[in-house]
Amino acid sequence: MSEPRGQDKRPLWIVVVALLLAAAALWGSSRLTWITVPRGLTIDGRLAGDLAGSDLVAWQVPLALFALAAVAGVLGTRGVVRRVFGVLLVVVGVLTLYLALNGNAYAVHWSGWAPGYDGSTAQPERTLWGPAAAVAGGALMALAGAVLAWRGHRMPRMGAKYAAPAGKRAARDAETELWDALSDGEDPTTRS
Image (tube, rainbow, N blue to C red; front, side, top):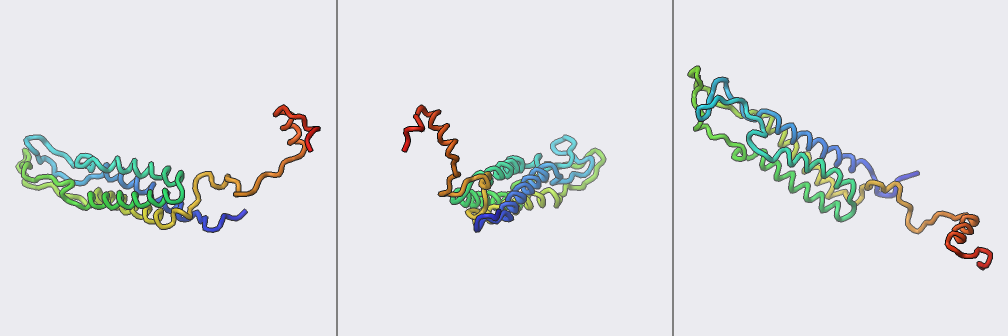
């Protein structure tokens, strides 16, 4: 049995996999170290440790959950609604990119840092991997949204393979029709 014309599954799989990878990247960015703090450095008199993404900003995990929920939205919608949803994903992906690339979003004011008890004057340093994972998550979400907005109306939807073709009815057996008439309280022998 062949697919209906224009129902290629590859773009749908691209969108679903991109959204799953975006969710993983955003969740991972919340767990990765964004700022390394030299041993013994204090801030406001307290010993400080490395700062993960979740210590600095709170948007990675909610956006990761949004990406996971978007998979269900992609599979459950069709037509114009799916294309509008694709545009929403592009907007959220671009917003994620902005938040990840904007240094002020996770800026740590170095003025509060003081040398540790050992007298070292080393300063905290930003790392590459935490923000890079967030950038990857935003880019994957924007990519998924762009593909969905572009090809969403042609993608199959969940349960579409079980839908009966329009205009075709299943052939009914004459004996089954007689039993159905009896069940409805009609006398099938008086039918013409």
